[in-house]
Image (cartoon, rainbow, N blue to C red):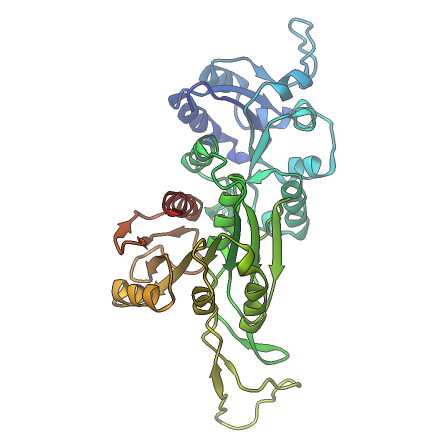
Length: 398
């Protein structure tokens, strides 16, 4: 990040204490850092600390009472390569989402000519509130990149999701942004993500714990590099908005297969992350099944193999990647799957590795290459894993 200009916006939350360390990391990467603080943020970390670490004056008000100068928010919005807002409180999030302009930071946001990245931080109930969810969706629809809050102990004493992403994670996101290329411009990519739900009756289903996060993170990474994405997702809480994204929401394996069949031939790359249920009930009851007998039998039938269908219908100019989650004999099972389903590569992770699997923010993968080599990666945040997978695909497309 040498010489990159980063405008850092700091809003008034307890997580502002981490910003001192974030600035140190950015300066260590030789970035140029300037900071805007909301008046409320000065209660949590001093402007003197921020100014000393950034080696630049701190901007707080429109009017500098010391020297009588006006702080030009338009000039500030034109200066940076990236406008990073961290921490982003629920209050400031709402202002950005709805165009409120009552302080220097929000005015600069409305004037920014660069990409904006925000890292929200708030208590878990606030972060989980539908209003926060909606406001984050609005920002995403405006092209703002979100660094999700992390789980852990919060200032309230509660434990859950709402912590500001660690400074190292934020720096990694920025480095990835500056390293990205337009490698995938002109490429159309089909991604499947999340679980499928196979209904037993109107209120019950067979499913699994897949969150869909891995597929959505891969989609974000590819969108950042110019790709056009068709994302077929089973039920998930993950959200994504982008002008080059076609998000198709499905429930069952049959619905996912239909969407894949309609779109695969028009794509250059397929990345099949979805955890598709292997079986479905032969019959779905039209009414809720009442509890009666001591035992209850459900007859199941095998679901269509979506990945195998894509492999059977893969053209010479298409590159197909599958995923394998195993609990034993992982490499052998993954290799067999790669061959059977005519894949170019397969991403392997195993529940034997702590920190890998469904519903987590981290993953540890191995990639079996087109030449049947094993590329091993250490445990990483799923955002970084997505970047590794995308880089591998680009290097092996030919």
